[in-house]
Image (cartoon, rainbow, N blue to C red):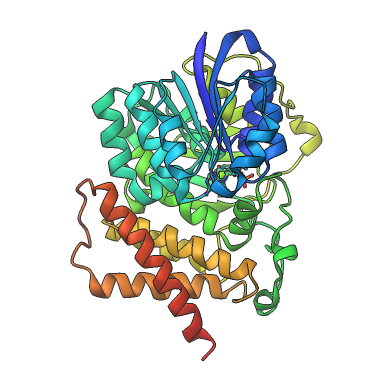
Length: 392
Ligand code: NAD
Ligand code: MG
């Protein structure tokens, strides 16, 4: 039996992971399930999967979780430190699907078991990619991508020599507002930005898809996962989201990966890797689909892509600053304090402030966690300050 933990179990990725696990309950021993405020869901899944421990990230939710699991024998805990302690319980396979920088520390701890870290939490790689990779190497752990684009690239590279890769192209649907007139974007509301044309995902990543911040994060994620340079990474707008990524080789050949809009493919690939197993996802009928569209991204519409390119070129703490400023800008947009397009303005102001102040540009050394967390904190403070200056 494989020992597994699912962090962010109550979210979109977490629930898709649980769906796969529930189909083969005898194959897995579930160590820890974690969630946030959806205690009923967390408790139900912990009981169904006979988890050792259920953890909520929020201390205020502890008593609800205790009540929901009273008499079941399942251990209960709450708060960021409890998440880390639960991640310290040995596992063979660990799903990192908390949203945001809160997923970083548990993932780092999980690497110490030397198993597989299935990484949906792209924020970890964006904020601390070199650290994550050096910890994986130190403990003999394997990081597998669970983003659809990066799983696609990973699959296209099986048996290939990365030095023969010319370029990696990741696709973007363009999100909810792709066809909106540019001048109308400033008025976009949370509800308007929050309906994804193809994927059913958490609220934050859905809005990040409309602003292209999700794709911007994925550009940085591509650099960290596959070690290619900024010049080798491209974004292609593809509204159908059926081709997830393409890898171009030095001989002019391109290997593209296609699949349905169902994260259970990427999750299942990481779950069964290095084998392939049958998965309960739709089979594409290309004759019925008929047509696929591609176009170059408009950087005026999606400045996040331009910022990500600069972040990759600068390196150092730029990724940590970028992610934290983006998370904070999204919080401010959700709270109605800034407009849709102002999110990118805030992130750009914060990045410029960092690049003006910092001597660490172009540094590629592994940056310790404390420094990453300090940068994350500073960027959030700056983002709030910068947001205020926009309306003065
Ligand atoms: P979601 O919002 O649906 O779920 C997030 C999970 O994290 C929930 O279990 C929530 O309770 C938990 N959580 C939130 N804040 C927390 C905190 N402070 N402490 C502890 N737990 C906390 O998000 P999602 O769409 O499942 O995305 C999860 C991660 O996977 C994100 O990093 C996202 O970018 C990535 N991802 C998602 C998809 C997708 O299709 N949903 C695709 C690719 C990558
Ligand atoms: Mg993706």
